[in-house]
Amino acid sequence: EAEVAQSPRYKITEKSQAVAFWCDPISGHATLYWYRQILGQGPELLVQFQDESVVDDSQLPKDRFSAERLKGVDSTLKIQPAELGDSAMYLCASRGGLNTGELFFGEGSRLTVL
Amino acid sequence: SQQGEEDPQALSIQEGENATMNCSYKTSINNLQWYRQNSGRGLVHLILIRSNEREKHSGRLRVTLDTSKKSSSLLITASRAADTASYFCATVAREGSNYKLTFGKGTLLTVNP
Image 1 (tube, rainbow over the protein chains, first blue to last red):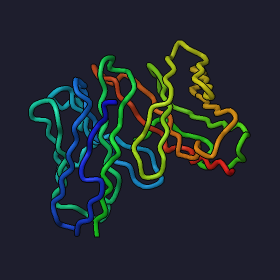
Image 2 (image 1 turned 90 degrees about the vertical axis):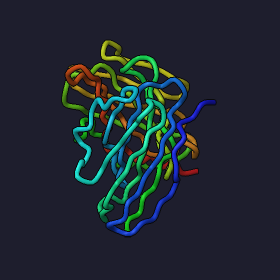
Image 3 (image 1 turned 135 degrees about the vertical axis):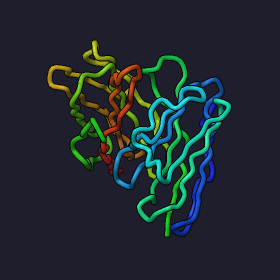
Image 4 (image 1 turned 45 degrees about the vertical axis):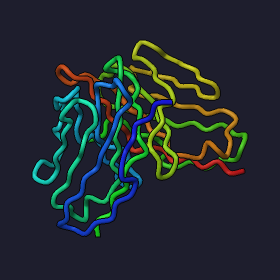
């Protein structure tokens, strides 16, 4: 069964360091999302791509966060510099077909900033 | 920002009992979806109900939608210990030319064996 791949699963870093997360969506899925989920809360959208174009990055803290999907397939989310408050689960999801349909999530990348 | 608000925040029941979770939202929607998340894992889609539908079933799941009250409920019948997880509602609403999916804060369900 096709899956959304994410890496790393866990990342521990010190504040002010740079960190990057990678996501490979289900093959053929044009829409890709990055969500941040703080423990005990629901996922919050950081950025949405349609192919290689950003559709929504209104909640992305652009002073320290960046995201790219250069060839419209896999994607990278970067944080530089990391802050203590960035400790969270970073979830990638993809969607095919209807733009109102279900999302398929990866297992997430758990970030701990010390 | 989060559109959906689940109620209760936490629910503890015995195996075999039914579990009901509610979701309220604020704006007009295209559809509402429910997801499940086991601890430390990604989210898994459970069911989608469109704005013109009132009730939908999938196995032991029953979802209702009341657009006049802007609310939905998820019923899990004959619960099992394996149903222990967090459950999130997510609303899909139009924003300009895009459809945005927004999650609520979730309900933590514990099913005791």
